[in-house]
Length: 368
Ligand code: CA
Image (cartoon, rainbow, N blue to C red; front, side):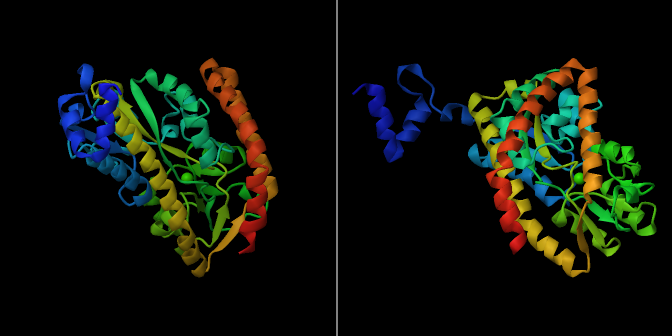
């Protein structure tokens, strides 16, 4: 047995681990603990308020895990939207190095590069599992990283809400025609599609939506899903809760890391960041999946009706959405490169998810 093998086998007992890690391995190699003593202090700017405890909570989970895995040597302090920078300026703050890390959603920054939307979601795109598969295993994150290298930013997937609800409507929407003239709070690409369908859309920050809906300044609003929506109280003033939120079928959040800050980390800390991002992703999705069912039950008990968007509306929305993606790809070769790869993955993934997943869900979910 070579000396190195002997020493590594000896680690099983535990005590020798400290010895080996502390003095470096044989043949001059450095053990894992050599770097982990370095003190690092980072600040994280989140795009989200503390009240969104599922999303914001994932940033706290990430920071706690990094601290725990480095015995408190690598501390990340999380700041909610507005504490350091406005929620929608997190990307700028990371790019400029105002903060080393941010928690945000890439579709907020389509003004900088429209294809950044593929890092979070586009209408009629992927559900959470497909989005994760595309990013982490299907080459999506490589394309995303290429785009973000223009901004000196590295990104890591940071969790997902799952399919969002379509939102709260005061009047019933029984056909595409019923959308015409409706005033709705819906930002982003979903808003652009709704506009194409005749809706007068508005972008209103979270805290101001309820009063606007209550006094009739808007007829409808989307937000996230039962657990988050319930906290804003929409069920008290609108009784029709529509689904699905086809504009956000699986929005993926992101941690952004400033390139220079990343490069200055020991490789062990970089691995710890990656692992903590993965864990935060799982925690966020599982919290949503655990908290949404009872929240929906409470909402239904308050006299709200869940309603499915009518087929003619869904078909028109899908057509308008896919056309927007095609138009954007026709205009911009950089966009087209990401879009073509994404579209191929979508085609294959939808064909597969349309078999066992869909058949099982269609048969079983509606029979409870
Ligand atoms: Ca939403």
